[in-house]
Image (cartoon, rainbow, N blue to C red; front, side, top):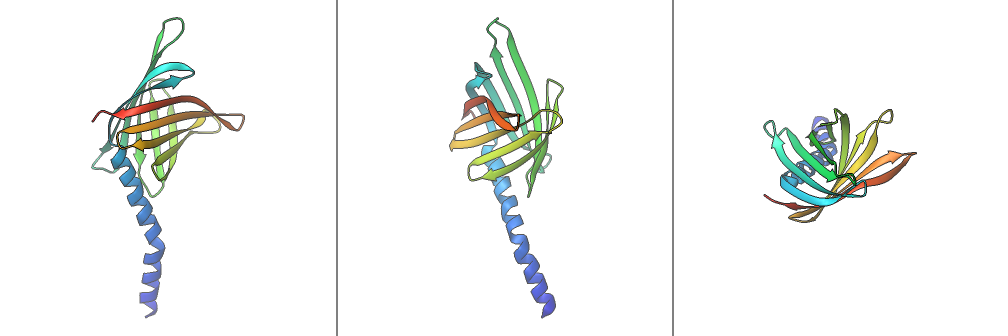
Length: 162
């Protein structure tokens, strides 16, 4: 009897972790696909592309990202990046971009919103919020942490292309 109660107690304690992991995987499956966006980056009109897919036998979510904008002196700047996310129960991952930057990632999902905290206090630090507005529309907002406060530096509305 005691063994059965212990087993049942452990099963009940594990349920929230299983439910969260399912929720995380469901979110990443829902965001999967190719997205195109328009918005601003550093106050300048910019174009954005992101492609989310399940990778390595669905063990990770993989993001391929690109942004580009043209400066006032007609110089086009482009950044490419890739990230891999472990979907849970705790969302973690790594970001790699064409600036040569690598960032650790930690995230949380609340409803239709994924918040990713990136970087480290000894280097660059910030957060990115991915939010579903509708099935085929998402808003992504980027912040950098300065003097202990998050300052927005980018925002874009995306449309799912496929």
